[in-house]
View 1 (cartoon, helix red, strand yellow):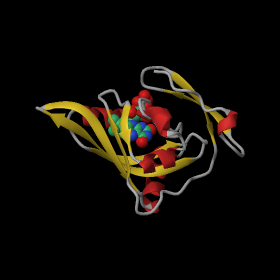
View 2 (cartoon, rainbow, N blue to C red; view 1 turned 180 degrees about the horizontal axis):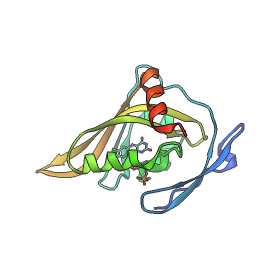
View 3 (cartoon, rainbow, N blue to C red; view 1 turned 90 degrees about the vertical axis):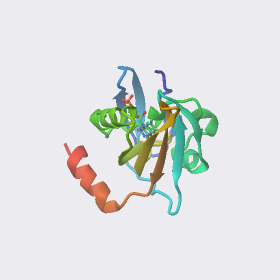
Amino acid sequence: MVIKDITAADVSGDYETREITFHDGSTRTVLVVDEEVPYPDGRLIVSVTDLEGRITECNKSFVDMSAYSREELIGAQQCILRHPDIPSEIYADLWSTIKAGNKWQGYIKNLRKDGRYYWVLATIIPTVRDGEIVGYASVRRKPSRKKIEEFVAQHLSA
Ligand SMILES: Cc1cc2nc3c(=O)[nH]c(=O)nc-3n(C[C@H](O)[C@H](O)[C@H](O)COP(=O)(O)O)c2cc1C
């Protein structure tokens, strides 16, 4: 899996350089800016992926919040949005749930191309055709601040 690094030209302001190791052992260098972009009110962020988590479709809110262009997103792995703060066990749980044909719901901190981040409450469901999983879809909505704080206290505090 090869995902382009985030470079200094992509971000503005102070940043920290971090390295992400994905489940397949590949790595990506990202620049992380400690600034949240608030989830826009009244919008759903939607994407559809193939069985490997490659983005096949996404809506305008997805493009806008990611800070990537649509061309950069379609065909890219969904983990292009992975933020280094989220422990990999969360994604392992997500994948084992949806591969088993079940719905997964949880809080995710996503990394934008500009190094800033946004929180979502994601619901991911398998798309089943003739009894077989053919891909996945994710619908994200605005998470409550209280729930994010609880999630951070449980999973992100050192
Ligand atoms: C439909 C769907 C939506 C996903 N949405 C996100 C997302 O918004 N952010 C994210 O970091 N990972 C998302 N993932 C999980 C990624 O595929 C991936 O597991 C994660 O970024 C961590 O990478 P890794 O599993 O290679 O370690 C999604 C997966 C699927 C199938």
